[in-house]
Length: 225
Ligand code: AP5
Image 1 (cartoon, rainbow, N blue to C red):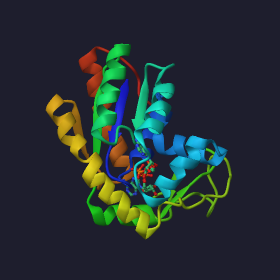
Image 2: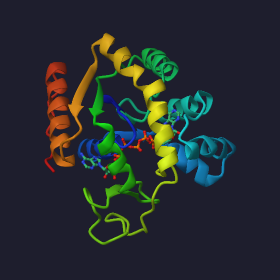
Image 3: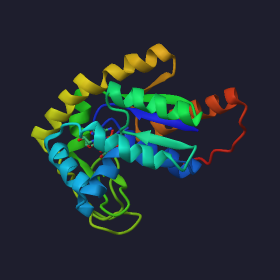
């Protein structure tokens, strides 16, 4: 299964990608996580990427495309979370997957109105160790401020400040939203209602994946939860 999660900042791409990855054992490739990890390791590309990320701008394609190429080179099943994010990335991805003879099964876009996105981003907490995502109200950790999975102190992302959030929305509108039309034309776009709860959206996505597998003649069980 090869899926792309599209959607504005805070729409729940990472949350849903992590659920699908865990329940189906498919690798989640989050370009945001890869870039943050590279920045934390202090690699030249990571440090350059950090300058763009903190402002809420897109990191240059030359950095991001290399990371994605490497990540998909040794797997034929993956969930792309946060990639592609502009037309050039989408076209590059098409070319790479064509070379590998691995077409995408679905592009799932999570549709959420702006006012909800701000609320979600301002309350987000992330684990620095395993990248698990929480929300102070909608998905709180069992113990305040600590990751349920690894017990680490949760942190607020540096780009979840009001100024960076505004810039990220503008970047999304100008550069990423046109991909909805790009994939719509190809007939591979599926829109889910992102205003529902995390569980409800996850159930909708599970149904979509099951339907695709049926169409492809694949039989698999899907654990609930
Ligand atoms: P990235 O990390 O990808 O950030 P983003 O796209 O802005 O998306 P977010 O991670 O902020 O949100 P999300 O949709 O994953 O939502 P989440 O599940 O966390 O990218 C960061 C930066 O890296 C970019 O700005 C750019 O600089 C750079 N970058 C990354 N990819 C790039 C690329 N391809 N090219 C160039 N640059 C790139 O949920 C948000 C919150 O809401 C959480 O608290 C969660 O618990 C909560 N929540 C989720 N679902 C629900 C729900 N249904 N109801 C209530 N709360 C919910």
